[in-house]
Amino acid sequence: MLYQHVDWENTGWTAEDSFMFTVSSPPAALGSEEFPITISYEINEPGRQSRLLANTGAVVKGGDKVLIGQSKLDASNLLFKLPKSQRSSYEIWFQVTSLPHHGTIMVGERNITKSKPNFSQYVINKLGLTYLHDDSESLADNFTFAVWPNPKSKSTTKPEADFLEEMFNITVTPINDQAPELKTKGLWLKVLQGNRLVLGPENLKVEDPDSPPEEVRYMIIRNPNNGFLAMGHRPHIPVHHFTQADIDNSQVWFIQNRSPFSRVFYFSVTVGQHCPLYKLFHLDVIPISITLVMRVMDLTDLLLPQGQTTVPITSAHLSAVTNGRSPQITYKITWPLQHGYLLVENQVVISFGQEDLNSGKLSYHMTNLTASEDQLRFSLFTSESNLTGQTLRIRV
Image 1 (cartoon, rainbow, N blue to C red):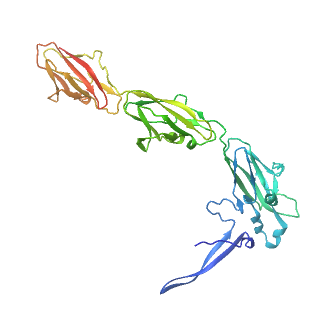
Image 2: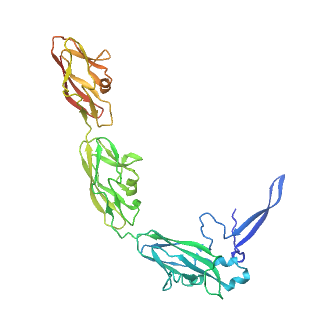
Image 3: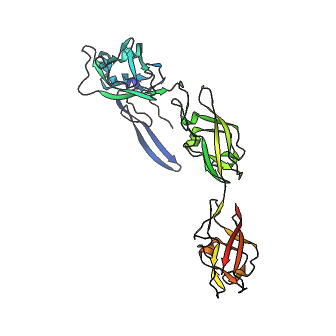
């Protein structure tokens, strides 16, 4: 159901309307009821901020002008506050109380200024106001005005009270007249071999004063051969187009394909009607590695006091770290011990983990008490890398 007010010229500023209704659901029935309707310019409807017949605002291109006519600014409904018999002896006048910040308002050839701020609804209806933008980078402007019914027989003076004050908003559509600028000088990204990493605005950013990030468009001309670019929500599907907004929102990822080589991709950036920018982006790959950390001055010496058969091997003798995603490091004997064997909790082993060294569970047990030394030859492994040809010397 919709109620539409139609007799607005004879209604006044505020009025009441109603309709009568009954309700029935046989055999039951409800007697006649009244549905009241308040009609007023004072009522604030959702999305309507003005009490005038029209205060729609205007849209203008940067550096251009726009005509503000009756369809955009109409305060003739203020006459409805007066008795119907008096309305013809009044006219609506405006006074600009705050001038626009990024442009000027004109009536015909005359500028609206602080010293001459007044104009009438009649002038708007006949000539209209003209707003001229100053071609700045502003995206919005406005001016504030007071409006009131003024007796035709009296001079135009804003009253102390009984006037309405509102704002007229102006949206400025920018003209793309400035070339885009590359803000990131070093176009490169360091990524661990086999890893994935966000390509953020600190790595790649192009700005255009007249365009939002959504309109700064990238196109991959030549793909990298050590991985591919993808969107965060679909990391397995290569993409060839994205925007600066995607980069700013951490949506663009580089997926490294485990190649150990550093490579580049070639791309273009397009904004509006400007000629594209063409650039190379470097992708530096950090190889996954395992490193033995020296915890003692001489890593090759594990000292077994003469007369003893067992000595613990701990992280003070062997300790390794990796820069890969898999932290599990395994040591494996590559050549049999000549005069003994390794034990982990009384079990003979040919491989062990870094956690066995850290917890002190690993030990060397000598079986040939006439020997003066032995050698533990081993390699280290993770699921991503290895380190071979390592030796720990065991000396009595």
